[in-house]
Length: 511
Image (cartoon, rainbow, N blue to C red; front, side):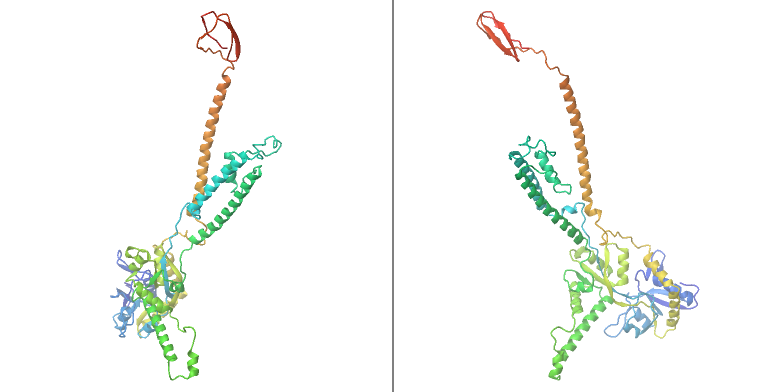
């Protein structure tokens, strides 16, 4: 309540954030329109009393010619001012007066849920199906083994002709380890290094190179297309796209301005068709006049007729909450994509406060917002002057920035799905994990190499410290020999002659 006013007026409102809102904590009205009304009071001093209209409607002309909502309150002189995001419409101007517009042209718009782009650290691996990766891996092992086999059995390979290639600078023996390494590095820009010496091995290498070139080229092309397509957010871009598809359901709130718009457009199309049909079938027309009406294509569009019929089949949401549940595919609306058509300012506010929603396309059927007063009321001219002063001082722009740009409930949404951005770390991060895993594996290998080197050095030192010849005594099973005969015995590489006594035993000792 403005205590400096000298006259009191009754103001009827419809809640529509951020234009008209009621704060239950402070028990006060707030919003863009409230700031506008207070600013007007500075030029035209008055008091005001705000109450919300009972039916929550702006004002619609019924079939019987009566009005509802705020317009009815003005017509019945139960209110002096109708304040909200009220559109200036021709039928309303016949029963009430409107001030100059205080807000930009606002039309209808489309709102949908943002497409949830699936992300994966190893998304670059999903470009090819699993069976393709398995086939590539099998081809790698098979080619490596085949190259090793050809190099081993070919009479012209290096390992079978070492003397022939002893003066060559590059000497590479293709054992299994080298074959695996050659096939792996051949798929990289680094290259596989020296090729086999034998012709059969080179044919295997050339075949592997051709295979790798085709695989890498196909993978690169598909990866670019895969990441580009996955970043496309919305399958529709405007109202025409919405009308030409049947997968996504769409509808406005019943009896809303958007509902009235589509209903009227469908009725107009039907009426135009009836007029054209009556003209074409009119028997009073001459042959020349009827020929002028004969056309090959349907002359009257049925776009809105089909759209309104689709809306009826889909069902109209009862309120904003139901529309949001359908957009987010909750409860009984699971697996049904839905596009909500509503006042653009409502959609902008919902998008501003919900990061999972997005506005689609440009606005259509644009009209200005204005304050409505009783027909013939002196408030019209007074408010017009006050609003023009506010426009000249650019105060309306500051009010707009306060409730839109700098609104405290405005959410700072993550723009990672914007198509102008590059590939996110969520889709390509697996490449870095591959590097980390490779580095960890290399560190473990280094530790093993160090341990093996130390252990091998200790064994070598121990062997070197052992004498080349050691006195060893070995007991041999006694042998019975004849008396008087000389026996030559070789024990451990030495020759010894022993004479034995008859019937005795000897032990042969080796040195």
